[in-house]
Length: 286
Ligand SMILES: [Fe+2]
Image (cartoon, rainbow, N blue to C red; front, side, top):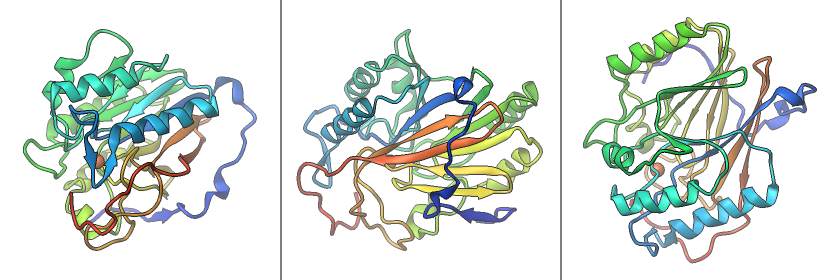
């Protein structure tokens, strides 16, 4: 995959996370991703009960008592695509007092996701404004495929939304990674037309960050002046830089983001201490 621009990996260099004085106008977001719930509450991925794992992550979020304005649920909300699984995930997400913006991932059924939504705080939209920030949600899924593509219509919508608010700090969210993660098996499922995507984003300096799920691992980087971020799943973790499928012993987690009025992004990943049950670490797929 060829992507213009140099990408700096900041994952192990979190020193750029600093306190910022303009705390009052900061938009505070949480990212919860790749929850992979099943219709059955006993459903598990490689030995890990995904609903219990999600509940542990949510308990940690509540324990930390972070002020929150919105939640970003960046796909693979369910694993089996069933209406019952969506009802389960929405019952968890609906317990938050803030709007929850959902994206579909490669394990989702977008139509079922949409049909299961009721009026309320859980939303499936293309973009939204909060304070001095603009959030754009891109559908990167391809029907009946695990791969990723941004269609002409999606890219046109991106361009339109960016032109609509050229002076508003913007965070772009999608499910799949738009850059190579250095993990061969995962990168076969990366966005397959990143040149078209970055060809647009490079013309819009109000974009401050690009955020994704799918890769079940943390990544923090910079491309030009844009922050790039991926976030651990709330269930199983994939081993970074692994050529073939491999699990990581890192625990599930979530990401918080403080989005400042000047465009500065303060962010970190938080993980739970341990998982319940025995994960099949030797598995070569799921
Ligand atoms: Fe996933």
